[in-house]
Length: 382
Image (cartoon, rainbow, N blue to C red; front, side, top):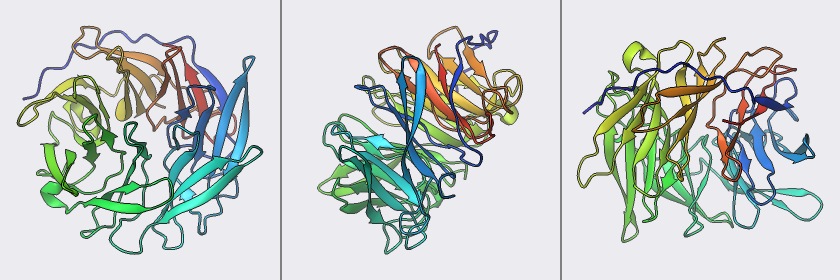
């Protein structure tokens, strides 16, 4: 069942959007920023820049001034080139994935700080068997078990992508290989882990209507089994899901579809917990006007239930937006910022915003724009 969307409220443009860093030309950070809650440092990657094959970097604030630090410049050979972001473990090590590598199928890597510099280690090189290929999404660390989970866009037994598990020492296990058709194909987004160890994610293509689906993986006696929770039709319910987040308290799933919905501009949806089939509710239909279109990232504030997200395009200048949405509320979608593009505040924010739960500030990246048109890192105070 598709619920009616809430009414569009007048956009409320934040007056506190600040560009905290302008990346060099041809850098293009596509991934979200990772925030160290103890130090406030931000970690991220650029798709290009450095030696031309991308970088890992940190941004550190002191007395209102942000400093950029290059952690590692990828060579594009055995170490690959990053597309997804960085994920930090409890010990402060950073994990990520790349395309390329020895088999041209991607790698998983680890960055550790030895007291004076960051050391890069390739943990796993994909493409040597049925383990998958081209990992583009962020890695997910299960806070309970410490297990590291990831997805690959292609590879596996049907070349439709996989979900894998990785140990901190680099041992890789393929948990599930997608088979296409109703099963789904192309896992471009990360998985989310619940308190019971089940994994949730979205597939861009295939599904019952070839418009993508939401899936769950559950382990039983060492075997992971997939359940399709919802298949998008490409109608008012949306299509081509771009991101997913999980409410740890209720088990509800929230996500975005990049297109379809009313006007073909994308939607924000909810899949409420259910004993059997989960029914989709549409929380918002994007119009492609000041509210933006093509939503690409979504973050749930688990303490308040507020959703924060990005649209890659649309807004007042058509360079994308950052928005806020309150499920089950009457405020509609609130635009927090509409990017101006060019040499100003950036353009095309692809990844979900990162929230500092201490201050409620939001951090993120734009893939282009800024002083050098290489993208920006921004701060928004809602």
